[in-house]
Image (cartoon, rainbow, N blue to C red; front, top):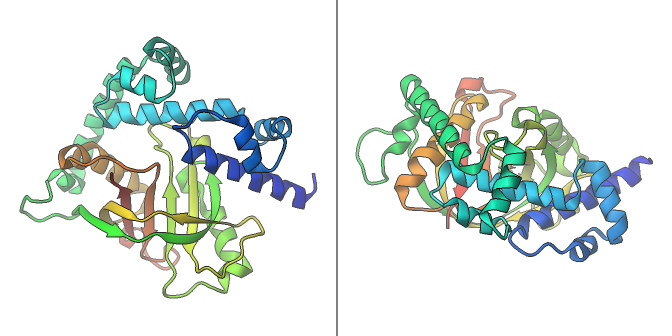
Length: 297
């Protein structure tokens, strides 16, 4: 396959994936998805399966089940509620599909994962002060990682989609920041950030999705494997995390597992955002500063 052809196919598949992500609660419409890709339904079906290893319907079902798994871990929805939200006509059908993906039925998954999460949070609490996140916004005391609710404007970004473990994203960053059209625009006012779509406790490592991004203005022209999107503004739960990137997931566990249930707020997006306030190339890992933003309803 010619490199230009492959790049065009990859861009089409990414458009489809992003469209399906945004319309996950809408009825499945393969003809509409084909229009987004700019291919016939038959051609897109073969192309998508060849490039992702999943059919369009399998991809959609997996995203819905992974969202349900995340809700089982961090929310109080019943299995019946999650079944209908995932598009299943009966809880029994949902349970069969969930068990096929995760090896256990939803109720057992919730019990086991919550027990494991409780143990993880106890371990985190024993070795650090991350769990000061469990304090409400109105409680006093020193907080090493204080959660603030902030409103932020939308951001226009150039990005590359990375698929795989979050820690393996360096190649994507090098491609993005090394592209001439991006490198010439990098400056003191540029934000380097990531959109993280998947929970490593829920999603298989080779299927984790992450968009590595830099902010741009309206004059930027996408191409060469670099796309553009606008991240919506709104209210976010914001934490400034100081430390090595390897510890970020523990911070998320504390935010989702301790702060969010006590805050009275609901997770309002399909991603979390990380804004990198220090340069990892010149900053010792333990001194890196990462601003975590979680969208709220």
